[in-house]
Length: 145
Image (cartoon, rainbow, N blue to C red; front, side, top):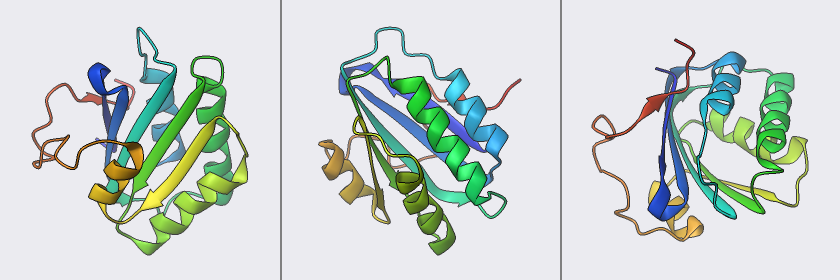
């Protein structure tokens, strides 16, 4: 399970968790599999990639991931705000690159190493999500079956 997700309607927040080595295909599958029935005007995304190994991604992969994310959200939401939480320097650098490769006025990204700072930036309470990331009800996989 490289990337799993759940949408919490009352918070208007998509929560993603990545673990292990990830590929371009895993991100594109995530984007394809997320389907929010009643999209809010503003979508919040908390991407917890502290256990993600992004070493297999190239700069062109990052550009494709970003362009795909913007394309899939641009006609659904007035604004998207994504907080990416990382622990490794490589993933931090790639996440900053993700923010800069394709510009969008409607899709704001910020990268954090502290998940509570990310939640505050999104306007969420620090204890919004379960402390135990292994026990998150409602998580779906972003992988194809």
